[in-house]
Image 1 (cartoon, rainbow, N blue to C red):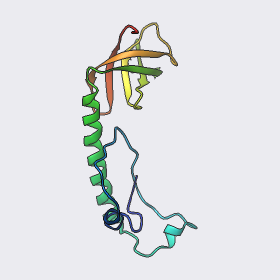
Image 2: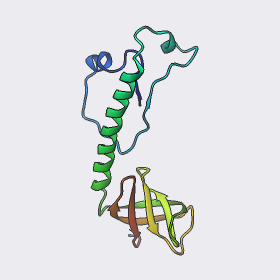
Image 3: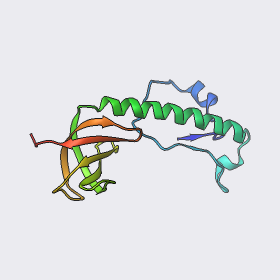
Image 4: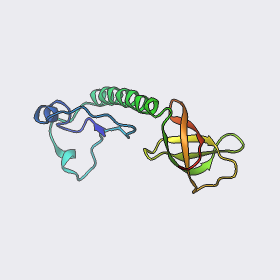
Length: 135
């Protein structure tokens, strides 16, 4: 998502039919014109201060939505693709079907394994889980 593109914000929202949308995660950035692109030549460029203010508001909203989504995952069961070692011995980090980072004790498992888990804890940017038997 970009904040600060010419004609972004109110002009676009006024013509759209807004519907409630939430994101489990999203990348966001302040728009910067790229030479040779139509938007770089458009009138109505948004000042840097406004771009940064919009970006801050957007990132605060995205953080709230990510946290709410993660909390809703507590107690849920899903498969995690193990990707890399964690910080602690025997711990691996993987990705949920929603691309959240998931930390778990995974002795005897390896990178590339797909394991069923139940989510136990929610952190600021990740989940903690334990491996359960396949159904």
